[in-house]
Image: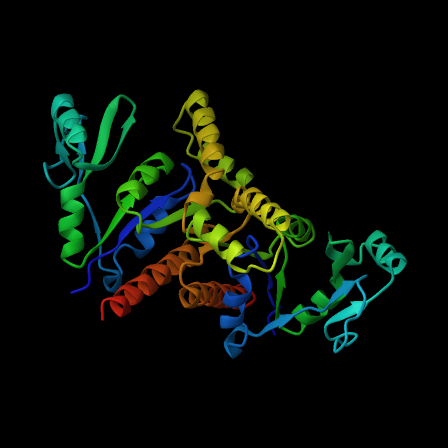
Length: 194
Length: 194
């Protein structure tokens, strides 16, 4: 069996990453799986250990980090999140393509450990559109919106660190193109291992 | 008939743009054509007016530029090159997809006049690989190589101005992915005009 791909998807907040991923994540030919992350945040009602997250203490998280057991990790509003390397390896060994939705900093960490990761960055048709989408959510304080816009602008400068950059001016089109990129990489892996 | 696309392909010198383009330019389903550029450089033996270039004087070129008849223009080792807007429009009206291989500055000019241009940037797997390829040509003086490397680094910072960025770590794969992007955009144009 061919080893699965490690696929990293990044893009500024508000670009519609989730919508695009939803559009292609269930296509059976892509054999996609999401790895379960480790987190220090508290379990919310309805969530399940090992399904939504592996819930750990700050100390356990730091121990895993120091032992090099995390592919990448990031702090987000006071909580830590990380991807267990072992789980990703296990899924890839089973021939599954593991999809990680992480930010630019996380992608940098991943590339150090997995140089052949298939890295994809989703960009908005233009920055005005992105601001409109971020503001359109109307759920956040102006301060958070400003922070997101600044982070988006910084991230857009780093698209050159990705193998593929895809414009999300049409969700279905973006999803189709990403599907093809994944399929072609699967085919190439198959050819290389023949 | 659906109007053709305007496709801009850029990428640093040495990235293998020409090889990738050669790989897909003759696929009939893509309906690709290259527009004939205007230039102030002298006609070389074997070249033909209206086939390789439209050969004009510096004055004629400047006149066309001032009259807004050029989609983009650039100076290269003392000579001017430009894309006649009218020819591009005519080809697109005939349902053909016009492909321009121009640099980042040229792409900026194009986007001002044709905001819906399909812009694609080809990147090397990494900068070390690019330097190897640029040096591998062995035909240029160190000064020119240094200049190309510096330009490549500057251009890589501007990939965020493109709708698609494709890594050329495998020519056939890059060509296939670009073919799919073009095909999907043709399909979308067809749907939109239904």
